[in-house]
View 1 (cartoon, helix red, strand yellow):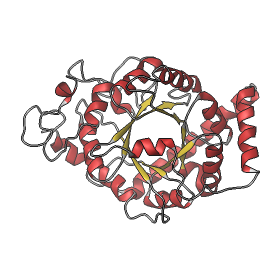
View 2 (cartoon, rainbow, N blue to C red; view 1 turned 120 degrees about the vertical axis):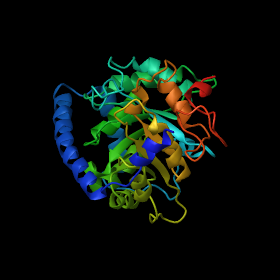
View 3 (cartoon, rainbow, N blue to C red; view 1 turned 180 degrees about the vertical axis):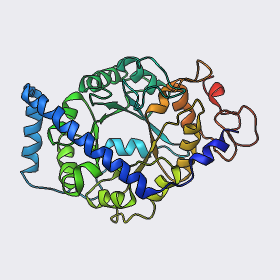
Length: 341
């Protein structure tokens, strides 16, 4: 049963060592992003972006503000409305985080407008577009937004669009809004508490919700204290993600949306699907699926859409395996082949 390998992957790892590694990577990534942004400014910021930037700065009045208690935006609402299953944020990227992995597609990912439609039709709640030179562009983000708009009035209709970029400057908030995003990702370990606190209401002033990415329990609490209400837990082992968002001090009357990042395994197995079920049962409302959507399965049906549909299935690691056709109890037949029928 696939759950055997999955259980090994869910054993808790050393949070301190993993967070230290993430912080080291974050420092290098931040410097690279700052250089990239500097070049962007030197070539001339588009008028539409500058207009949005000034709108944001005017709304903030040059000082930090706090969103009214109980503020819940449309992205948070749609991520938390599912009952008995889990929402999936499907990330579009042109390049995998670690190209050459065993079990992953070798060719470049299909165009954003094609994948955007696949994500929607197979049940994703939101699509996150990688807006970073390492894996995508803001043009990709805009293309996805336009494709989603074409489904207005259809069933399913447009899904939320999220900008997945390493934000190091307020200007990127304006860039994301102009490209059509409804939410952005703020990495707590990169921007720090003060900027996180200041940028959340600034983003809100131009129609953006903030998903705060954290790597430790301390960062998770800091994100909430800074006004974050959508928390993205990053760790390899599922129990570490669960612990990261457990027993947090949440202001009275506030609601927290908990998202877990699914880390792709370097194989052709589908433990990522079982992890999504595990995290759902542990209280997460959504999962962020990136590289794992581009794994090459043993069957043509095992593509991004099939993986999304399997993740949102009302199955359980207690009764079923993502690779098992037999079994007893709830969800025993909810494997990839059946889910596509």
